[in-house]
Amino acid sequence: MVCGIDERELIAIITAQVLAALKDGPADDGIPVGISVRHIHIRPEDLAVLYGPGAQLTKARDLAQPGEFAAQETLTLIGPRMRSLENVRILGPTRPQTQVEISRTDAIILGIDPPVRRSGEIAGSPGLTLVGPHGVLMLKEGVIRANRHIHLHEADAARLGVKQDEEVDVEAGGDKALIFRHVQIRIGAKFVLQMHLDTDDANAAGISCNAKARIYRR
Image 1: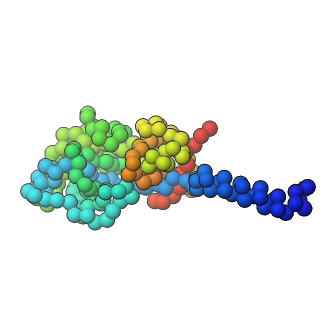
Image 2: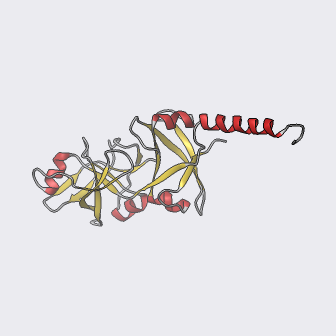
Image 3: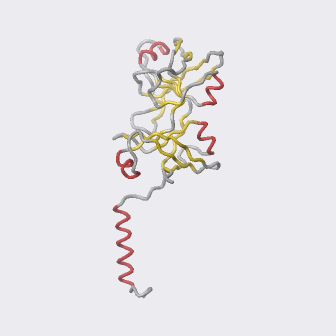
């Protein structure tokens, strides 16, 4: 007997607590972090200019989000000061508009000042020159620094109590633990839970891919 409770009663209490925890779902062990290095999303018309008529992207490896992949095809980026970044990978599938996502460090190398934007919001952003094996494309706009964001399945969003396009604070516990602010919530029926940071943010916190982060609630 423990504190007036016999063994059978104690087992019953513990069992009830375990069953309740299982019913509520798995414990929150954090949000996996994916680190986005510089990359390009491209529309079919621009791919044809750079890789030739009829060109299609060739899958190199799948990415975390279903249907998305890193392509074998790469391009060179050239900024207005004639500085370049080579072997910048294209991500598939193709999209309605071409968009280049780089970090602040990349931008300094290229000599441009891209804004922090949500994916697809490229109006008024700077451009640069794209060089492929078949041709050259002068991109008038489309270079951004992607905002911090989390992809969530609908079930994960319900479990974490967040809504579409909400901005939250997220704590990343690396060697230089940081709280990232203004992290956009993106909810989709096919999304896999993952937070996306660029290389500058990841390096600032001292974290690598598959590190875990948590929504910070004060």
